[in-house]
Image (tube, rainbow, N blue to C red; front, side, top):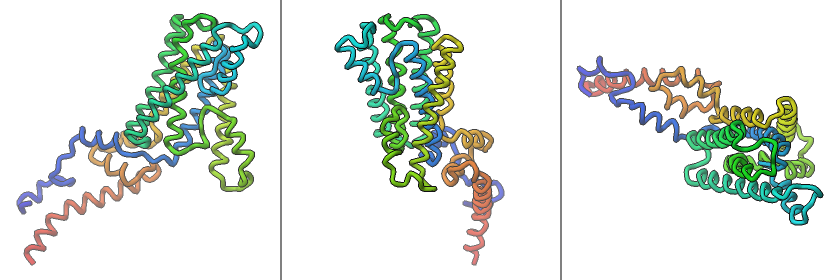
Length: 305
């Protein structure tokens, strides 16, 4: 750099920071999964919410496939007595759709990386879109809400079951096997067999207990919403709204970054993964800018010596 350029040199150096390049870097970098159990616990709540509504409306589960497997087995003998002839089809479609959702999400996480911001955001938004599609089908009466024997019901089930499968794949890919988000049998077993069940510091136990509580609360909310409104549509719209809000693992962090200049965004995200450390990140950024601004002058005096 020439000496005459020192006064006009930008604080961030001569390199121009292109918004597109910074946005690409922002979306493809890894997020801190320290708080990942929080949105996964919300997923447990949503499983209870949607499964309570779907069983009440169509006598089939969207997430808890153990029950559907039993229904499938009972249907082979036309049991329970008086059950409709489509119960096996609803159960089978739900099981296959969940597996398909898990397959697609699992392959995506393996190929791209499960902790990338764009990957997680896209996954949760696609899951929300699946619920929205099912909600629109029901609200427009394309799919009957209270007639599980109508074959058209089989059109809506895949969307709800597939997003449950993607939800499970998300929890597994992030490394939180104690939060399967759709089943509780293994969670109950792991709780009972945990040798450190009464220990003060036991994060896995806390997450398992949280999943039980959240799924129970979700089921209760789904039951009362179905009873109070008399419709499954309300349950679906609530589920879609909650799923959409989990498009980012750090909602507070993303909100704060919205008020930070584009030039500082990538740097702060790289060194400070927590929103609570934002002020310290800004301080370090300021110190770096000052050092860069004084750098040319120091180099010039060094050459003179």
